[in-house]
Length: 111
Length: 113
Image 1: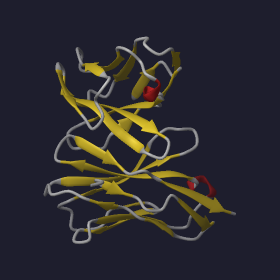
Image 2 (image 1 turned 180 degrees about the vertical axis):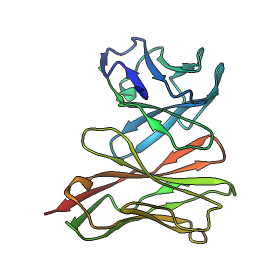
Image 3 (image 1 turned 90 degrees about the vertical axis):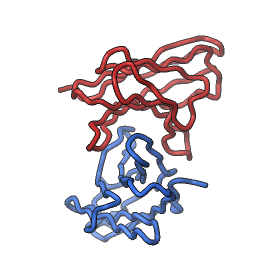
């Protein structure tokens, strides 16, 4: 089992460009999450999904969109990247009665 | 108000000694869970220990134990017999209700040989 994987691992964007981060899990988990981690601020929840076709906003959803068309995949989109979105992005998945399992992270820089 | 507060930005501990990392939380939901994660310099998030709000006993996992004081809303992590490999960032987190998670700002632990 690969667990939770994230694609890409690193990305540099220019302001205004768009991109999609892919999270995939092979553990058949119902719930999936996207977080961002900034220095000194811990992890903050962007969006989450409790099942295929459902998404919900977390603590810091502005500037991001998500989709969960398949149970194993959770996509995070930036339509018009801004320097404030420079961060490390973590995806996580879990069963309803379990802890979260995290992916390795994606380091995004917006110039 | 902050949902999770970790007041120790950095901590030092001598190898083989025990160390306590502090965490307080704020919620009015009767159903919640408390977690500790370790983040080494390589960046991955590693789950350490979990305590449910209805659990009567403090959770333990090997050298890790969670000192759960519900009335004080604290969930401190105790690491016994510290090892050099314990040097890392440690994050306290809370699951509020079924879905939402909140993380603290973390504590950087350095184990001194």
